[in-house]
Length: 145
Image (tube, rainbow, N blue to C red; front, side, top):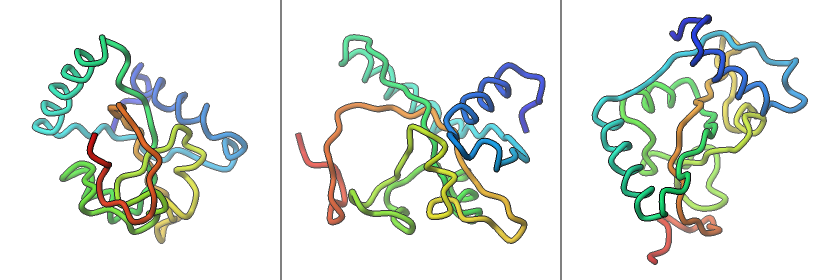
């Protein structure tokens, strides 16, 4: 768990709360953990540098939210986000990993149902964003460019 007094803890909690909208008073943060898989993080940093170079050093990283089940949260912590294992809760825009700009969407029961103890699991992520397209339910991968 992150230390409550740390700047990283405070910044993460504040960003989360700021995007909860009207749900702010209905939720209580029970625990905040930092998950950083060394190999995946190294790959992330290399991809980020390549994207920044290709985009003229524009911002390619955003803080986004991902609500999930308790069971899936363990898989994500072990293996990272993988679109091959997605699609249980939402496939409206195709098979893949969905992230929200606001935590308000990710805390919805559809995406992060309560476990037997009444807890929800939401990831606050640093996500690389690049080109995008509007998907559809039959898509398994983004269209080739």
